[in-house]
Amino acid sequence: LVLNEVAYPSISDFRYFVQLSWRLQAEAICDNNFASDLQLVLFHPAARHNTYGEDFEDAADYTIRSPHPTVHLLREADVLKAVRGGYGDLEGLPSRNKAKLRMDGLERCRDRLEDCVVSRKRTVTS
Image (tube, rainbow, N blue to C red; front, side, top):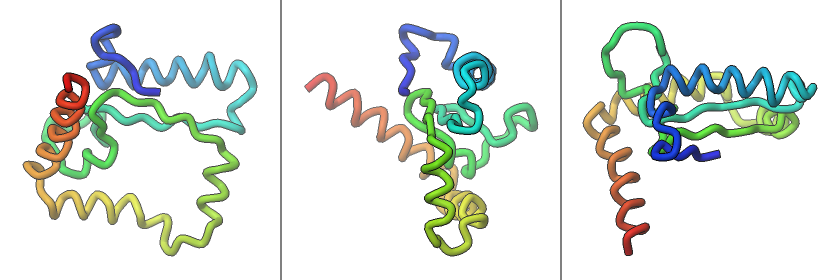
């Protein structure tokens, strides 16, 4: 689900978006007995791994950023299938991705995300 920040400006705030996801998890997934079947994964333009921590930018945060607030709804069975699929060192994947983005640098990560937004605007107006 890609959420519209114009229609719902409050989701521009990452912390609010996280709190909204808790409500979605509780009311749509848990209350309907889907907790063992479904997972939510969030991506957001301002996402941070350390949501309530220090206020410094880290290129590693771009592993969970997207041009627009996005909620991925994953089926647990598909996640388990991927985990059991034989990918080597799956547990180390997040750390490797963070390290790669830190090597690329904060400016390059910012530019890539901005390019997604600019490209999208050009496509829509064409």
